[in-house]
Image (cartoon, rainbow, N blue to C red; front, side, top):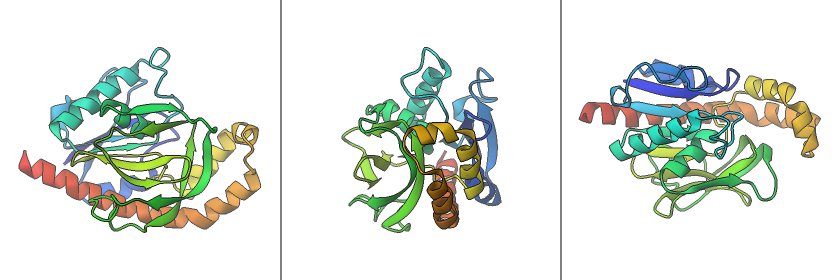
Amino acid sequence: MRILAMQHEHDSGLDALEAPLRAAGADIEIWFASETARPEHPLAAYDGLIVLGGIANPDEDAQFPWLTLERSMIADAVRREVPVLGICLGGQLLAQAAGGEAFRAPEGPGIGWDEIQATDGHAQDALFGDLPAAFHAFEWHHFCFMPPDDATLIYGTRRFNQAFRYGRNAWGTQFHFEATPETVADWIDTARDEAITHGVDIANLRATTLQHGPLQVELCHRIAERFVEVVARYAGAR
């Protein structure tokens, strides 16, 4: 199984996703779209696609022209039913590629740990169905997504859609389930001023990261295992 991971920042990688993916036999290729024009192989060579987060917003194609290419590749993957997993920016790009929207959050950014709640689409979902109906997840984003009408919403909060499935094999999340406590701590150090500007209590954010981070890593491993199962089915049916 060959999975292409679209990574945009050196401090925003697969993190807690990587070990369980590799343990399940996935061959992972990391592609920095901002640094290399194309991945090593054409899309048809991959059995799965993971699109990570980043500082770019989904309406900044003029500043980050690789967004246009990524969105096109995601749309192609969706048409082929290649398994897709988009996280934060990746989830927003998936929503756009599938015919939905991504836009600046009208009440301001989401930064910190928020309790996400399952919708009616949760229980039977191949990726999230065996996760808790509610848990605290980490988010750091200025934009949010509205999936297309024919998508299935899986998790949400009062302010944001948090996870959806499009078709059989494509999932997008707004929350950073891949982020370990160490990753979050690094982001806090790097973007501390930004967080404070938006009213975030840094001491409380560090404390809640220690509180909720270990469970998120455990849940991330479960998501990774389920995603590999979907990828393996797709690879076996090709």
